Length: 397
Image 1 (tube, rainbow, N blue to C red):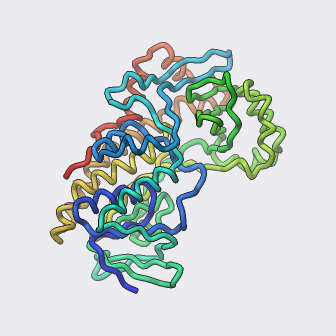
Image 2 (image 1 turned 90 degrees about the vertical axis):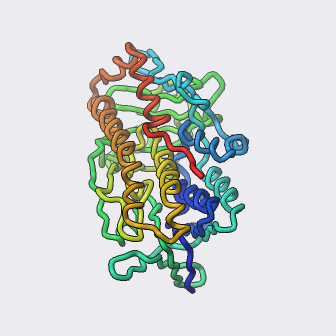
Image 3 (image 1 turned 90 degrees about the horizontal axis):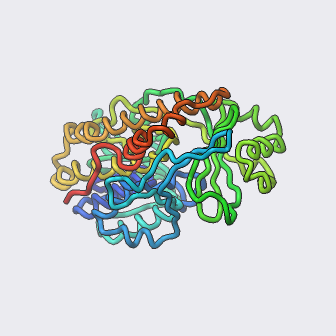
C-alpha cells in the first residue's frame, strides 16, 4: 500500500506528535508513524519545563494538560555528606508564568497531544508502524518504507522528518552521523516509596564517591544512582545487598526502604550519551529531537528541547509544505534556529558533568556545589537556562 502526504514523521515521541499537531492545524497533511502499539514505556523523560508549558499556553492547552496527574517542583536542592542541605535553584524567581517543573508520565503527555492532534483532519497517527527505510530518487528523500501488521507499506511525502530518537533509523538510512561527546557516567534508575515527612523538593545527594538523584513523584521517589561510565556490570556483580547498602549510605533516610529493591529487574540502566549532528537535514529530510542531538539527562532538558525543535520546524516549514515550495534553505533555517540553543545546553551539561559529577564519582567534594550555595544567583542563571533556555520557542500561525 502506498500513501501520499505532505509530511511523514518517523517517531511518535513528543517532538513527532507535537510537530504533527502544529502542522495539521495549519493545513498540512501529516502522517506520524509509531512503531509501538502504545506509549507505555517506563523511565522516559517526563520533566515538563516552563518552556514547554509556555508552548501549551500558545495553543490554549495548558489548563487541560494540567488536569492530568502530575507533580510540580519549584526548588532544586542538594544534600551533602555533612548532613547539610542547600537550595541551588529556585524556580520561583523565573521570568515566566510557570515557575515550576511539572513531572508527568510521558505516556499521558503523548496520549493528550495525539488526541488533540486528531481533532485536525490532516493528522493521522499509525501505531505498530516500524520504519524500515527511505524512499529516495536522485539523491532526494521522497518518503518512507514501513512495516505494519498487514505487511510492508510505503508513504510518499514532500518532507520526511526523523523524530525517532537517539537510535534513529531514519538518520542512519540517510547517512547522517552524529558527533559524539564522552559523558563520564551512566545512571541506574529505580523507585522507592515516598513517606510523610520526606523532603518535598527534588534534590541530589552527594556522598563519598557517589551521587544520587532523587525526583519527587508524589507517592514515590524516582532515583538515579550515578555510576562511572561502563561500570554497570561491576556494580551488579558486587550484588544487590551491596547496592542497597550503598544507596542507604548516601541517603540515610531511605535505609528503611531499600529492601523494596527485590531484584535487579527493578534497576534500569540508562547509558548516557551526548551527540549532535553536524548537519540536521538532506534534500527532503530533516532530523529533530534526539535524532538530531542526544542530550545528557542533566537537567531533564531532552524532551523540552525536542518540543522546541518541533515548534521551530512547524513555524518555518508549514507554509512551504502547503504551497509545495519546500527547499533545502527552509530546512537549513530550522537548524540555524535551533542549533545555538542545543549547543549552549550541551555545553552547560558538560560543565556540570566536569565540575560536579566527575569529582563526586572520584570521591572529592564538588566545589561547584559549595559555590552555588554561597552565590545563589549562579543557581538562578542555571535554572533559567534549563527551564526556559535561549531563543524561547513560541507557536506562530
